[in-house]
Amino acid sequence: MEVVLAEADWTARRAEHRARVRRWTGPHHDRKATGEKHPVLDFLFSYYSHRPSKLERWHPGPGVVLTGDAAREYLRWPAYVETADGVALDVDRFAEARRPTVEFAHRLLTVTAARTPRLGCFGLHEWAMVYRQRAEQVRHNAWPLRLGSAGTDAVVDGSRVQCGHFDAFRFFTPDARPHNTLQPTRETQVEFEQPGCLHANMDLFKWSYKLDPATPSELVADCFALAADVRELDMRASPYDLAPLGYEPVAIETPEGRAEYVRRQAEFAERAVPLRAALLELSVTLLRTSVHID
Image 1 (tube, rainbow, N blue to C red):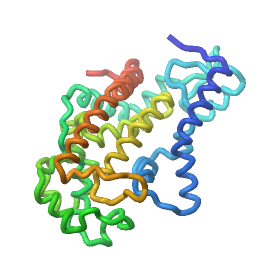
Image 2 (image 1 turned 180 degrees about the vertical axis):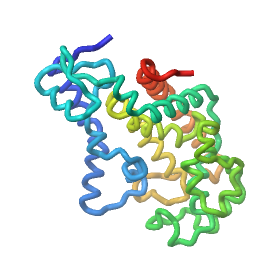
Image 3 (image 1 turned 90 degrees about the horizontal axis):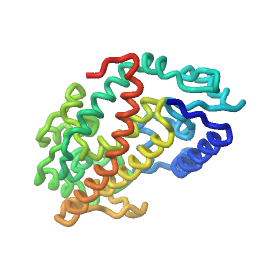
């Protein structure tokens, strides 16, 4: 069933979305203009390929018709079509053009949602990324390691590293990789993905924009907000001393820090549940007419 939105209604939603995401895109634009680097927030626009201008752009999602003269501006994107009532996403054409991406997202989201969250990795992936590296090799080398190089290495040596997320594991140093109890690959991503993983929940943002412009922009913004909060914990639990930026450490080398990490990890896993479900529902909608779903 289609929802027909009057021009005043959808332009108000568009303005609200833009105002919401400019909380993040505005400071990013300012930093970029001055050449300032931010070890926490830059990741959201560098590792993830969705440009700030695209994040600010509003799309209604499937089954929504935009009315009024302003709606015709959406026809600049090939995913949209003019109908008798206004302008809407052409779901069939979009699904067919993006079939491999939609199918993979559907499969990954389905298996991840069905699994029980595994907690207790303690964010050691960030420690494994600097394990036994010289100072100039460290990714965020403008920021000191809280425990120094030797102390950082000792935490990895004394811990059970169990990262199953390939896009974290692939940045481990060569010396750190044998410490990991799992050896994920791109081919085994679906096999290893689980809903307690910080990076899997951060990546909900990736899957939301991979389905752009079919993903309602409010859902994209919700996924981005989760990714931003997850990234903060990710770096607070890292070996870097980011206290001068206002990020007090979660000292995962201590029992208290590990308990805090697990608590926050569980909160993020719970917060991700409705977002993953919404993306999964979107994938079903996109595949229903043209792709067989097992």
